[in-house]
Length: 334
Image 1 (spheres, rainbow, N blue to C red):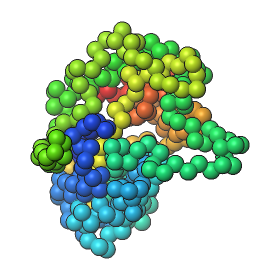
Image 2 (image 1 turned 30 degrees about the horizontal axis):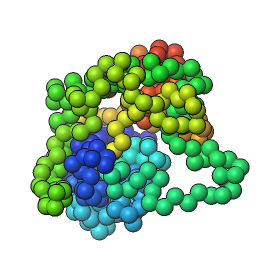
Image 3 (image 1 turned 180 degrees about the vertical axis):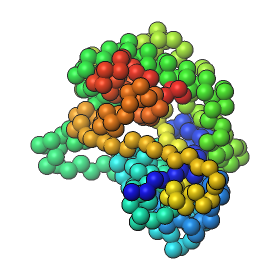
Image 4 (image 1 turned 90 degrees about the horizontal axis):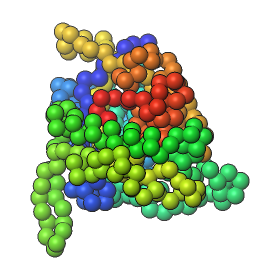
């Protein structure tokens, strides 16, 4: 097995749906922008890539038609570079990176590009046409359970209080604001020159910062507690919009090469190792379970790992099960 090196990792700013400044920007255009920038920062020729894999949770409309292939064309990749779009819902982009890393590790390819793309402004949650399988709806309706309900199930099963979720959400938001103010995200963000049609005219602008964390948002746990609970199957729901992540996703891309080739490009190189194991909890509890990856890591270094659940209840659940304490710290940036 060969080691894998990540040469560059970039993303667009995270916009707000459906009110953000990227709401009228096509996701394939965002993907093409970051793939092109990732290759430029890595200092490699597009023709050196042997595969492009992009994750997409709702691959239709503006992000359909094998959007990875469309993104490759927009980024200037040669026609000979194949492309594939994969779907594992929220972990689609990370799965794409894992697949390219695995192909490099086993010697199938020497270099590749991977990432994720999503516009929740242009393509609604569930897609433009929801057509549920009647057999599953009747015999196993949890196959289609919304994420908010799975978070509610987790909160009930592990007895995670609304106060714990609010405390985690507030701390996460404050850390994100502090990290942005300190310029922690500046190097990874690719500014997006775009335009918006509003008030009867087009307006040009450049989006260079995330729109989710805002100083004007909730500033105290008490303020979080006053946010109305989102409607779920339970009348006494503890899940609100306060502990939830921003309802948009950026386009992000990794450019990877085998370590042996990377050494030829640079005198010194840092190999990036990451845990990418996953198990499944079942639809009713929210799908993919990060505990398999975390259990294989040194718990003293768990802060170096990244988990990205949509709801604070999922974070607390992992912390409880691994005895890391309530609302364990995921990373320094929130």
